[in-house]
Length: 101
Image (tube, rainbow, N blue to C red; front, side, top):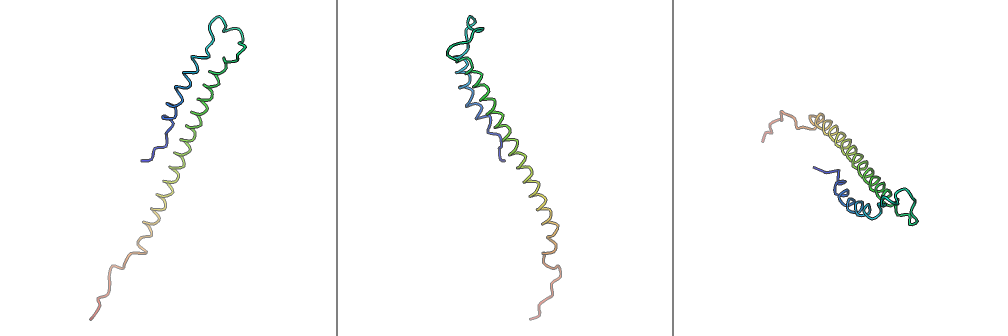
């Protein structure tokens, strides 16, 4: 069956980046209340938001693909039913005349 949710693999790709950057930019308790001159304190939050946005987009894409796939399959099932209902029109007649030779 077709798998629509590759987002787990993509999430696994994002995790090392997010956690590696969190360790680098976490302020020490003594500087937590003061703004830093380097501006690195927002990097972890930015990466978290970026990872969450990407995860949200991937999940939304997977949901959309799943909905489209279900819609397509329902349409194909309806067409198959119509073909089966009309099959009698195209079947060979049951009683065929005997050919005299």
